[in-house]
Length: 431
Image (cartoon, rainbow, N blue to C red; front, side, top):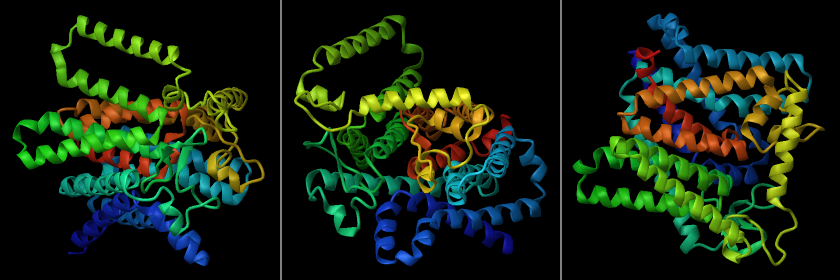
């Protein structure tokens, strides 16, 4: 009886986290504004729940004597090595304690969530369907509020619940031009919103391709609305990295769905189209619409900061730091965690971000882990979920070249949770 109850509580916690993470930004801002003394607890709600879930999982694995089985899994081995490296470096390389604590949470929380789902789905196979439904309900909330922001609500509606210069801007613009509003929906900003849209788009398209012939008319309608809304949400986010990720994810889906029907002539034609579109973007760089949407640059003046140059500077600086610091600069030495120390540093590249904190070894472990997960997703591609997560994973990996994509808790927890759901159990048979 205790075991059944424990597994149920464990499953509920996972679903609360994966749903709550897509709506927690406005909720935590509102509560933190009105209850400042409880701000730390409010902002740490998911980490606290993950701690409880971890204790339940360990107890249940011990009761079933499954430690040996899990420890033989290559994914679990790399996860443990990566986590241990973080704690060793936290002890070896001094930094502000608050920055170290924040850095550990940012770097490891989504991997912990992946591990909980990946291992937990073996203990509770029924978790799969309910978990995925909860994810889709959360996507409906994000998509729905994004549509309201686009067509109904005032652009600064979120300012009413605490958004502002001291928290998160209620909206952004492209190059300080109010004609190009970048919405947040319920996420932390336009770039995470665009990345999240890629995940939902890829999963829905993969499901439509697999089950399209068996869907009822109303299900076809819902599927079409979800695909259109996710594309529209990505467009109004004006996130160039997300647009690139969408192209990569769509290419992967088309390549798999088309299968043997793809021939060299079609590949050549698609390549020619991409080259032609790229040349048009370059040729019409001075056009106001192209300039704003693609280059984020106002030919008539625009913003005070050139984001393109900032990305280049960050890439150069991050590369130089990685080369000169083989063991990294320590946990919490970059990103939002570093803002808690006396040496703030922003690196706009996920791989350089990781190398800066945990060095060459840490970067190698992370890439190894991601590659193994992607390989298992590909092996399980007969599942619509696995195919959608694989395709979106390729896109998010591309975003990582331009932004530290896994730092955002919504994007990272949703994708890694779905990855754990897709390969949990399957990975044990295909190690």
